[in-house]
Image (cartoon, rainbow, N blue to C red):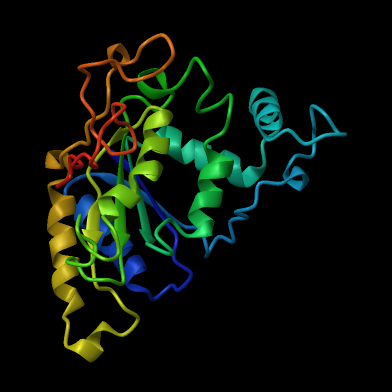
Length: 258
């Protein structure tokens, strides 16, 4: 299997980047082919901007989707984006490694998604979800949090981390990916050794997880027949996330990752 790892942490010696090394070693030892990129080390420009498009469909008004599609169809996308698209095309599995910042992904990763999930290339109104370009591929989010597992639980003060990650996972589902349940590592600080915590145990646990990556469970999403002609959930269709519920639901539905 071909596996592409995208990491988004600004410190090369961070625990997040140690996780990338661990994953690479475990996956290669299991016979997989692995490529990895560090968005910060490669100075990826996270800001989608007209300056990236030297050949424009409309030089007077910058329409992001129109220019992305024009660039894709004419082979004039920015070199950074082209390299990422080639890696995604090569990969059977995408692993996205990042720390949770302000209840979401770092701006670097969000910008990577804004620029690389190219309109007209990886999705369109006809090519999305089960018809997406990336159908048959899988994606895994490996995420660290500063707060404890208790605080990040469904009833925790920090909020349910699995729920916080759902919009990112749904974006990957939108372009066709099958989405694995996120691998979370809680309580990661810059100096965990101050509390006597042995991070090598977490690295070993993640290495074991990667060695058995083929057994990792998938998240459930609604099927095409679950929607009515207005694009709303049909009565009787399952609700897999509090983000998509039936009208009148009084309490948040439990996520499939509990």
